[in-house]
Amino acid sequence: MVRVATLLLLRHGRTTANADGGLAGRQPVELDETGRAQATAVGERLRVVPLAAVVTSPLIRCRQTLELALPEASPVVDDGLIECGYGSWEGQPLKKLAKEPLWPMVQQHPSGVVFPEGEAMAQMSTRAVAAVRAWDDRLTAEHGPEAVWLACSHGDVIKAIVADALGVHLDLFQRIVVDPASVTAIRYTPLRPFLVRLNDIGGDLAGLVPPPGKRRRRARRPTDSDAAVGGGAGASR
Image (cartoon, rainbow, N blue to C red; front, side):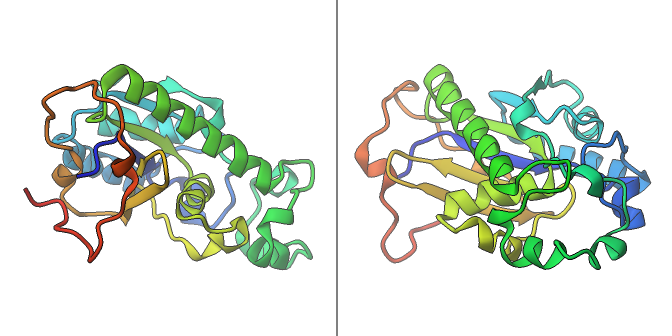
């Protein structure tokens, strides 16, 4: 059985910009009524999961999501999880941006995109992946391989982290869907990451909690990285 820490990636709930079809970027947009309901609902699902730590993007929409979903948590802000810096694109309607010459490149070759007055998508991917991997190593060392922790971030950021976990080039990350208030789960091992859940918007999360081990701080074994030939038995136990 794989015995490593589990990362839960939570996208913030729907915002006023999402509802209006705009690109919020790093602007201080807040959750709308639907987003608040989504945050409350995902909180109910997360109650069965003991979290070793909660880490968040500094933007208010992520902090509002956690205030509603996990009111007893004390999130730690990590700038590595902040939204991509879309520069002069921020605050503009997506319909307008779709007519920009850069738009096809964003869709087909995002690894080469640098937003006007903003950030490169490759830079966003690098700092986000580095942030979650560093936290995962730290929390596994502190809490053992049964640790489950949560990072609240943004759609493109989570997609980039998932692409890295899958070994997929950033140019293909637009094939990944991450909805508001969805949960994605990744387990990092010495050999490879495992994508355990993707864009989960309603499933039971109890199966993501590893069973207790005899030695909580047991070191990771090489076999922790092995995939189950034939598919394995799943989360049932």
